[in-house]
Image 1 (spheres, rainbow, N blue to C red):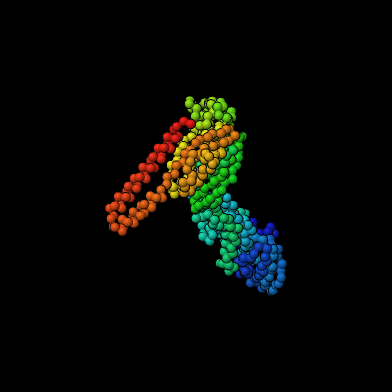
Image 2: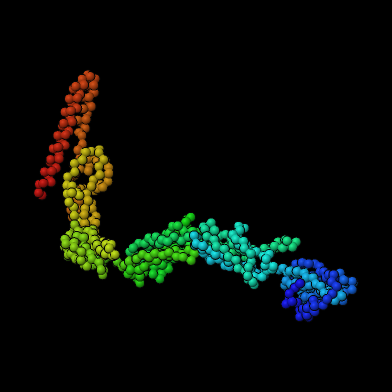
Length: 532
């Protein structure tokens, strides 16, 4: 029997009275089914019957909505509807003042209304514990309800659902690199197979885990150390031991000037390169920062960059093109903070400025002056040079070195006659023979002929003046009668087969020729040295 507190007040009072009344006994009340499980909100038919043929009372006691749908001589059939929860209805009967009852077990099942795996961390460090939490709201009967935590389809934990109205199930796992990108979920199982209904499952939305490794070391930052205003240099930031490297973010900045790096990823490392351009406003010591962020962690490093301004020195000539004999001043000046050295200054000591004065001569034409500036920046000595040439204007000049006074040439041999005049501007040169004014072919390569022999006057002219120089040309050639004698003699000696005589005549002729050439050269030299 049910405890009195479980019955309605009226039924409890009747049961108490009936229990006090004597009776013959023997009458039995039955209920069918004894046990039943139905979905929440469903209905069920309950049959109450008695073994007494002359019962005075037969009914079903319950707080549920009931409706008598059929009856017989010793039974009644009731429909219970809109069943929301577990309950224990009972049938009762009274026979000859003897009361009896029979109870049934009515169990309601329903699936969880909400199954959710709590959000995972956006990033989970490898090697740290991760707690999975699954919340299950609703679901009955709880004795048949269990919760599983899964990684993919791998079972991590199986636990019964405890707690109402929300059951929470937890499990702790150690995050690994291999867990990156895998899905975690929780699944409920309502096992009603013992009741003949089956196994009912309900799963949460899967959540993806992202694991990462960020080493406890600073990124390696390669910087130029010093930079000149207006220049552009590249900087590189790298870090090894990352996972997954492709998910890492790189931040490069010069003070508040953010750079745009190009990042290259490898298996477990990255390298970021960016261009830095500095302006006059950046002059001074600036901090270059590189930060690598992965997950919810970051590693950063800083390097100092000294930004300087170093204009080239000023090199000025009082006259860049000066007539010969002009006094020319050369001045070399440095900008603030630098010192200069004027190459060619006898002192050549570094000062903020240097100056020399010279009397321009022909030898100074085309002379280069170098002003070298030096500036110390962050322990580095930097140099910048400026070069300028001096051009000296002077009249034409012809000297023996560049235009020899005596040329002795051998007929028939190719020669290039050379005579060069100096001067600024460059003078025009021609050499003409005394008497007929024939032009000497200067600078042309041609066979020497005897008709170019003679004394020539070479004349160099420019807007700065005129210079002349006398040149004697001697051409050595063979006499035709000697050639005939040698040819006849060779023929006679050849016929007589007197080889020794032929050799003697040939050597004699060679000595005569050499002697005559020497005498001609001496005579030409005497004419040049004799004053007019």
